[in-house]
Image (cartoon, rainbow, N blue to C red; front, side, top):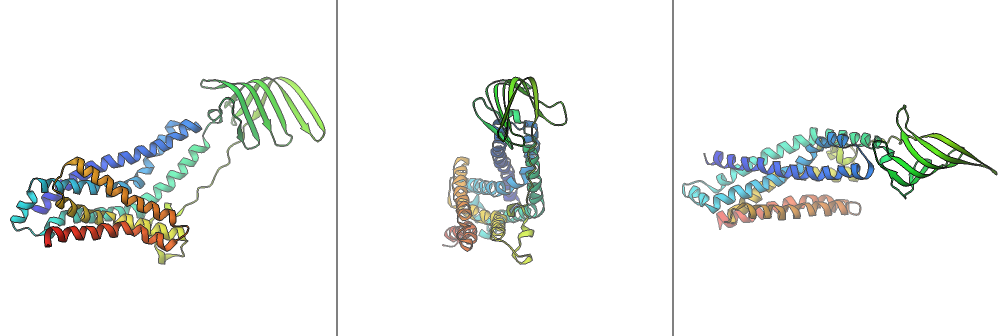
Length: 349
């Protein structure tokens, strides 16, 4: 009964925390993607259509956060209200008190393994492929700013002013094409015409200057057209961080240093809920104030230290592979040893 009661309370808190932390991480990813809209003119609809593909990756980081918060609050409230004292007085052993947290941590460890083995790797690859497609669809007219030289392949384009609208009109144009033959255009206005299969600049009232060897030629025109080159399609390579945990197991294939590091990083992350559960359960029993503010502050402080160590490990990997792999495991080891110390402090000494 005690295990069922505690597990139900912690599961409820965990789901609420998971909704909050995953939403927070997802919001951060949305802000990163919106930079493509603000600075490169990508379509908002296209950006929002791929946001959900990032969710399986984000939830791998949200689960340990949410579990830590749920256990700190759940056990903390029980300690504050003397429920733990009453439960122990009823003859419940310390191991039984920790059992709900360890069950939840173990279940989430299994869930993270399944996610990192099959779900997240696939969605990460699709996400990068879709993001690459979004970049290919970015409209050149949204990248041009008044007074700045814009370069795309063999063309250079600048204007002094822009009249905004569904089809922006550029004024006082300088255009240069460095292909064969090379030429320059000075025009009063220009627009991007997308009515055909290929987009093109349409210049109005200007002059074309050709230069070939020692020959120079200029022509006045009322209207001129030049095709806009298509962006080169970039191939999406499968990086080590995009692979699943099963693809990175050391003894299945010859690994690069990056793949070896990613294996240890993913394995440490998968096991993190188990270590977080043990640490948080013992810490919350030690701290008698089980309010949500304290739990939230403790959660942020512990997570900051945890992910700082992971960031340091990633930073030193190019210079010290073995130390980096050892360092990614250090947060879990620290949590385990600290949790064991708290356990002995509360239940043994």
